[in-house]
Amino acid sequence: MATKKCNTKCKPQACSQLQRQRGKFKPVLPNILKSGPASVKVKAGKPTKSVADQAKVKKIFPHTYGMPEISFVKGNNSTVSKKPINAAVVLSGGQAPGGHNVIAGLLDGFKKANSKNKLYGFLGGPSGVIEGKFIEITPTLMEKYRNTGGFDLIQSGRTKIETDEQLGQAKENLLKHKISAFVVVGGDDSNTNAGVIAEYLKKEGVDASVIGVPKTIDGDLKNEHIETSFGFDTATKIYSEMVGNICRDVNSARKYWHFVRLMGRSASHITLEVALKTQPNVTLVGEEVLSKKMTLAQVIDYLAKIVVARAKEGKNFGVVLVPEGLIEFIPEMKELISALNDLLADNEAELSKLNSVAEKKAFVISKLPAKLADLMKSLPEGIAAQLMLDRDPHGNVQVSLIETEKLLIEMLRARLAQLKKDGKYSGKFSAITHFFGYEGRCGVPSNFDANYTYALGYNAAVLALNKCSGYLSSVKKLVKNPKDWACGGIPLTMMMNIERRKGKEKPVIRKALVDLKGEPFKQLVKNREVWAATESYLFPGPMQLFGPEDVTDMTTETLRYEQSKKK
Ligand code: FBP
Image 1 (cartoon, rainbow, N blue to C red):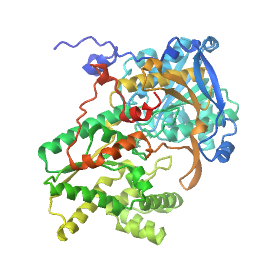
Image 2: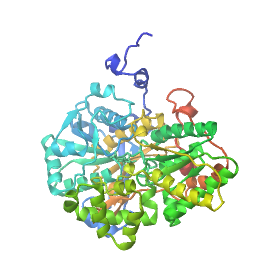
Image 3: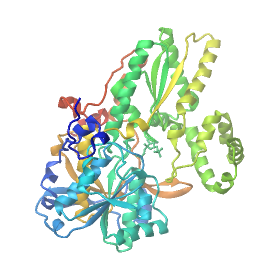
Image 4: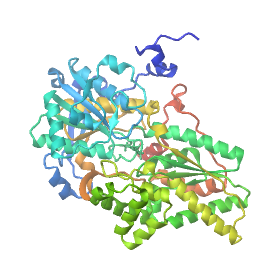
């Protein structure tokens, strides 16, 4: 077959057919942004306050606390086009589909305001800001990255810019290159960091805007102004295809129980969304486990009941979805992890001298209170070792490395063996494990994410050009046609509260966990008994980029249920 001419100006061998076609996709800009930054005016709303711990947050952010919400309205604003500026972007934290389109939206927004505006991309995440490593993102360079997945144009990283020295280096690098607009694309921790930098620059009298963009496949950076974070839509479509395929395999072979752990460091949004799309037999939701204060033994009981009931019908097979953050929601494990967080932070030097896992475990057990030490001792070696792994720079346990599904299977197997002895179970239990996480983070963005990220980037450029600083780019009314999406910004401090990180109290953007009174979770509760007993599986199939709009442009069940009442 003859290779078609590449419209994205890259070498033919460097581009797949799909990439070439996808390069032609033109994201739809919301009408309010369509005529460019010079036709958008800022409308300030009421002053805001943080979601909790107002006095403490205000004290830490005296210059940026309480700023008003911002919405964009049509109007002449040609001042934003007058003087050329230098802007810069950094991608921070885990990858999420659509990152490149955020950069494309930023570039197009800045260039539309003034063709002499320049956009730089800091390399390798926030460490690039500290070290002053960057490239210029020219329109030609951007061309082959439009509508592609991944963050490979400038890469990402999890460094946190927090010490005075790091903040000072970041400031110097912005000043040195006359960067007056700095955009941080990240999740809750990275956007907290954006808030810290905005506050620091204001305190230092630096005339530069810092704008955040809500990114994370986990879907936990949301509130009434941020209806979803970008990447959630695509990642869950990819996982749903894979889980749907497993459901079909299960239903065909009828001999295995598949335990699928899904990404989502803390919140269970991804698992819930995939469950609504595929209707597996069991879906564990971390937030429910916490609210019911379920012990690990009770979680196993719940699983055992379903396995036993299905076995009675001759069904020794099924699909179980496990959110990767489950482990932190089981109260006794939560207590253990929190004690370990402090213990590991306080004894870093001593622990680094110990070489084997056994030595580390013994040391940790000697320091834990008796109840937690017993729990630690009772855990399988692998899980105990995984719980002691280094925390990320923001102080989070790296749950993607903890094989919770294996822990559940091991304990469930023991419970079933006991039930068999007692004559209450006569089935066969063969389990297979999967972890779907990294597979979904760099996928080609769905139409929704391609449009949403482009709008978020363009919108961030408009906020920065209007010298708003310490704001998160907000594009909402997302269940409507993209042309009708509403645009503006919300203060980063508005989403903050105080939490304990690395043994210390820190201001952080509060994660949005699954709302147990929310419609998506209610849908699960309404259906789960039937799904447990039957094979009601749905097979969503691969995400579609071309074809009928009701398939290509559909968004998540979560967004649909959450926003249906607001329509
Ligand atoms: P962000 O919150 O930075 O977007 O990252 C989320 C995530 O993808 C989680 O789902 C996962 O637990 C974690 O990143 C994995 O981190 P890493 O990429 O450092 O292994």
